[in-house]
Length: 288
Image: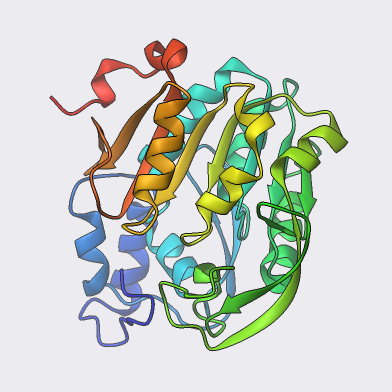
């Protein structure tokens, strides 16, 4: 989606739109993304919605991605697979946690079995992450205001306006043009795993084409053989795919709510699964 797009002129508005999004947050189907452009949602204020799996999220309707969450674009398929894989227990890491959708879902799946480390560098998103963690009573979430990278220190985070903070990145050539930059703390996944004594079985990464740097900062973590769910860009697929191939991981990319093997050039969300854990993905999730 173009992060600068808007839906102010959507034909479905008012009470009908509110009733429709109430339903859409509960069901998933092919074509739901395309329907989004026809349904108007509020652009101001805050509201609380319930995501798949039971997580409650307080949304700021000024931000575009949160308006999409309100509509029902809540990554239900990806969250469902993640929830299934988290049944193995252990700990989880959310790199680029935003307001906590994935971190809270993971924390609820792991409650009593493991902890979730959530890394989010942008100050406003980090504050919202903390608020949503408290809203859900997730005492097993460790939230850290920092960006994951290949080394600890300080770096400039390129940021859009308040509507598009989710597209913030440490890349010097951001895939979405930045409006401003702010200095943030950086750390490595390996540093935090060692500091907290974590045993990760699952890592999620969504850092707008900065994923290769995150991977370079987590070789010891990858030695523990976690499943990794990551965003992949045309500029990053070769480096990411090559690293996981070298480590004998299987890649399954998301295509229309099904998983397909392989990682061709393009923009994808993909699960990288240690070959010995491949059997944890049921056949019904695969495209035939």
